[in-house]
Amino acid sequence: MMEMETAPRTNNCTTNKKNPTHLKRTKQTVSIASLSGLPFEIRSLIAQECLQADAFRLCLTCKDLYSSTVSRLYQCIVFDSAHRHFNKEFTYKRLKPSTVDEDADDISRADHESRYFSYTSVRTVGGLRRCMKTLRADKVKAGYVRRFECLNSMDLPDLEIRQFVKDVFPSMPNLASLVWDASPEITVDLVQQIARPEYIETLCLDLALRNNKVSRSIAQMVFPNLRHLTIRPYLSSEFLVLIAKMISNSPDTIKNLRALYLGRELHLSHEVGSGFAFASMNPSQSPVDDQAIPAFFGTLLAKNSENTKLRLTHLGLDGITVNGGIDFQILDQAVELETITHLKLAGTDMIGFETEDEVRVNGADISSVRFVQPLGPKLRKLQSLEIDWSEQFVNNVPNFFQDLTRGLQSLSVIIRSNIARSRSDMTWSEHCQHYVDSITTSHCHTLKQLALDGVEEISFKDVYKPLPMKALLTLRDCVNLTGLSVSAPSPSLDSNNAIDKLLHCMPHLRFFHLRNNHTKPYLGQYVSYQIEDWVRYKHSVERFINAQLPSKSLSYIKLENHVFDVSVRNKPAVIREGLLRWFDENVFTPWEV
Image (cartoon, one colour):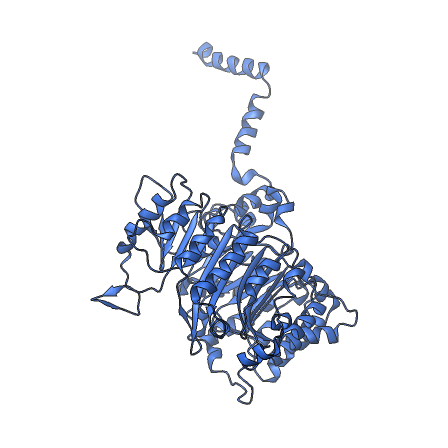
């Protein structure tokens, strides 16, 4: 028995002598295989690549993984009641601070990924209240927050929301990006609760500006490192003076600002139920406010003693009314137009003659005094353009497309049937053809994303107006498009349909949106509401897929508010819910805030 017992003991000793590092290597292997045994920095990087649910589970495993993962859950919080996560096609990343003006084309893939961090989405009312309670009670977790977003309505009482913001903002010393795109609008006194204004780089606010002392105190605020500023609704040019004074308070703000968006109105989705809808208005104010450019950019010029221009890469002027070349000169003096890569321009140019007879008698070139014509040659780096522009008695927008010295990559255009066309001899078809010809002549080889929409102005309301098929067929020259949205009549069963011919000429198209008037015949009459009968589009979707052959790049098709997934060719089209916003961003990429 003794020999039998000592035999294996002798073998073990022999084995250890032959390979003395055997036990040591075994221990090392066990240590490397353990996730909690990795360095803190590695575990933090792993947490950044985890989805929200997976990061939450990691926090529940052990103290080491909790310490390296908890910041991932709180670094970027998004309150979004409309959020839907569909596999990996819906991005779960947000842009980090200090990366607003970086050019993604000049950096490596690894550096590009490092510009983003994962976010935590809070959707339900119960989740909102639990998150709000945690941020109130735990200042350490509130200190992790670097980016805070509130999108859509939170379905909570306004008083509860205001109290939450008032309690939490002072406890966020590392907050750098604040996005409030929701109802109710945030007020100036709540913005003043931000703990470290000098750290703020992004302010994207639906802001309630009123004729009171609190709102006017915004002129005294200082954000020296501000890089992105979005303010809406400014409602009146007198409030733009206050915002301009806020920017001019610090020379560093003028130096650092890269993205500026000023909107006169709220998003349509936020107007109903908005607490600001009942704010007191100045009844003596004219409904047409044409002082936006002088009020904002003129104030910047007056307050800027060093005559430093804003070096913007992104500029948005939404809902403005201008006075032709006079306002352009003010804009040109205040902004370095040559550096702009993304532009949104929506509004009206009021310069014009009283009657059409005056134009014939004087014989003057009235287009020379317009706002957009001298603007085109200045935009030498423009890549993305959203434009919805009206002019009195003339239309220089097609000429504006041709004056751009660089081919556009993304373009969104609203073609209007209004007084500008009614005073000319052009029909609607000729009017649309003029637009499309200008686009294809100058930008057909560079365009990757294109959205064309037609509207008719009737009693302060934009009514859907389809684009003629002849104009749509002209888009066949844009062979490099990956996203396309067009306003056209409902799909027909005609095998020679212009849409079919258009798709056949676009081999790289992945996202296609056919916008119509959301109606269908019912007992011989057209109804004004949308009937949820997506089955009637099934044959149209299949025809669109076949029309693109031999190319098979078409992956998603949107008809009305239905997104069809057609990426798998040997399977029927599948309705995908919750992808409307994601789809629209692939048809036309919005600003990356």
